[in-house]
Length: 177
Figure 1 (cartoon, helix red, strand yellow):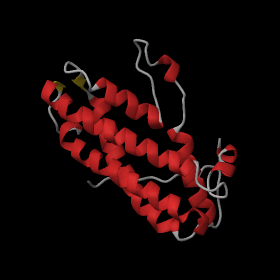
Figure 2 (cartoon, helix red, strand yellow):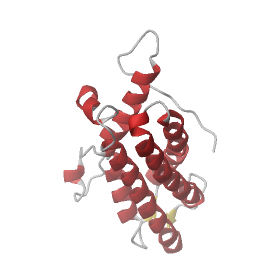
Figure 3 (cartoon, one colour):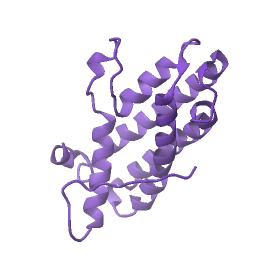
Figure 4 (cartoon, helix red, strand yellow):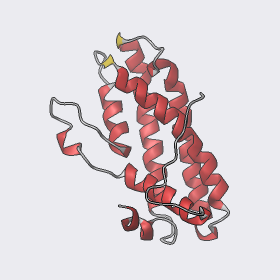
């Protein structure tokens, strides 16, 4: 899948310090994964914007029903997640050698990120912009277990990163909130 990727370094200018950027990326990934914004509104009738683990959980639950209609939100999310999350494994492996105390945690998180990416790639033909719109019970039956597995793999990767040695992520979480 080819697409455009933008990297925004909020409030930063000047020379890029690789270690700071790596820690900021890991910290933001963990923060986003655990962001609970709007989760209290999920049971309402209005659409709400969710992030991280909450996105996958709701998405999998939505497609667990045969009569759930595939819409533009599904296409947007699979486009974004499949293209961006597929890069996580390479990133984690690449930086793992820079953090000897967290090398095993980073490599372990990479394994789960790879599992997530594999599920997301399988979801592309089911949910992407060019896939059939509307209600499709067979599509939902195929998509639901893949989304559930992607959710579990992503959540495990983020949990591993969150509990990695404090010098990597945990001590920096409050800095970037």
